[in-house]
Length: 228
Image (cartoon, rainbow, N blue to C red; front, side, top):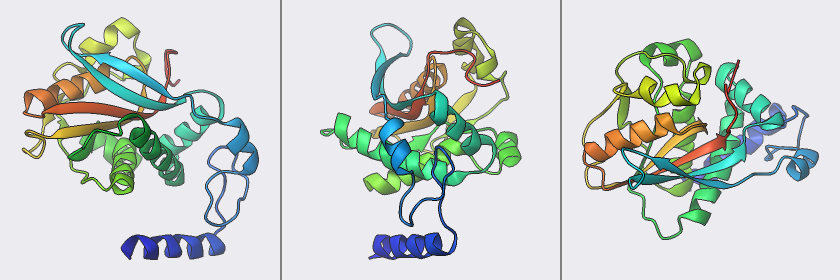
């Protein structure tokens, strides 16, 4: 009932303030998120990455949905730095479907995210990974809880070479609370490049008692740097 009321409210809001396509910005019909043209041309490039933790034998999977390029990259930058949260809504919806597709037998206990620092969240106004994670949890019917915190500032990952990134995130995150103990956790980030940050956060969750960690990201890229 609550979900139905939310959908009705969003539809009525769309009538008053017509939505725009996540990718090209064109005005689109109420209840939609992308235009017909972008729906046909901006397609997911679904990938399952293998993120190594402490050894080649210690691996966590990561479901990454879109290639971080072209209109996806432009959309992500607007979402991260210009407050266009409707872009995050779209990515969460599509990522939820992808997670169901690739992990149909996995019973997730909770969803969490790679957090910004307190100052980073204050500067942006919201945490972009948290926004996707909370909507993803709602789509999947899984509790979304903060299980990590960033305990110290580090150099910006996207300005570093691949070989520098793992060292740059080591010791930067710590576990929060005990909700993850004995649980299968879905760990969310917006973009994955080398996987260094997600790997570090997954390792922290496992050390703090998580039974299993599986990662998910809205976009993936092999290019460096991610942003300029």
